[in-house]
Length: 390
Image 1 (cartoon, rainbow, N blue to C red):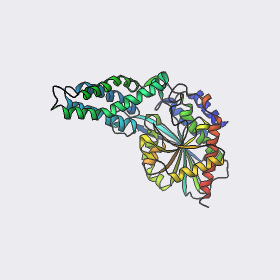
Image 2: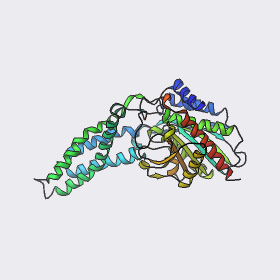
Image 3: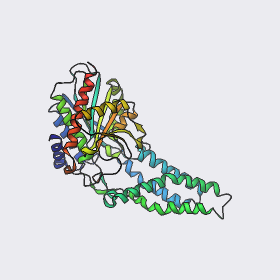
Image 4: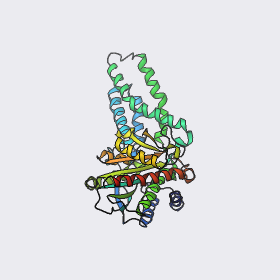
């Protein structure tokens, strides 16, 4: 199957593709050559962004958390300030991917790969088929500790987020109980202090190995590629233009899609864009159309979800629906800008798969059936959308 071979070919030629690396750029150029075989127009969209900011901020954030654990008994007001700043930076800049602290970090260059397939008649909408081309340094505590590593991240993240409330309580009781603080206050502090060492899972989150990135997310670009190839083979859509995008630097905070939307927002609105994004297409039994993404506070259009679900059913795929509990996908960048977008994932939503952000993300685990279902459903959906304008 061409989609699976495309994944294997990219990994064999270029290996892992960390954002802003030479391998990422060569992969994008390779996609342009591949898409040039069947598309009318291809280009690289260059952008600059602080690509290390999302993970670099974790060290100062958890350092401030540790310092505030000590400061709360000496200078409660200072502990309130430190812990609140740390919690806000963690939630806003790391969890929600909001570029609040970008000004403090050095920008790096990356790029998006783009190919266009015009419609036969003047287009009434543009269907964007997308995935991301980069891969990430390994989440080493998830790889080493498995479920305990994930629990450690959850516990330390929740502890950091809730600790400012404890500091406020400590400050409000410091006047009347300066010499003898309430016993419950000490017990609560001990709980935070005891779990604080688990923050090593954030402090030192990345290992030296970069994930090969087969399912995350060459699978998404492969689906977009082969669906685009099938649509180009004809008959050409009459009213719906198709655009294929391989986003760069997704793993550093959705940087490629954010830059693309920022630089082309006016045009995208004029084109009546609908984005169909693919991420982590691995398991045919766990194909999900996302209803929303918890970390980004995004909900997707139920009407579009129902339309896409119908196309999956039409090609015999047992698709499910559900919200993404952690992380984020490139569809978020479009949705937050007021554009219509959907994401399909091929992973379980109730647990992390062993290949997620680890060295195990190899081509042999990507099921051809999952790729084929997504390709066929995409082609069916594109033609269904086109028929609505007849």
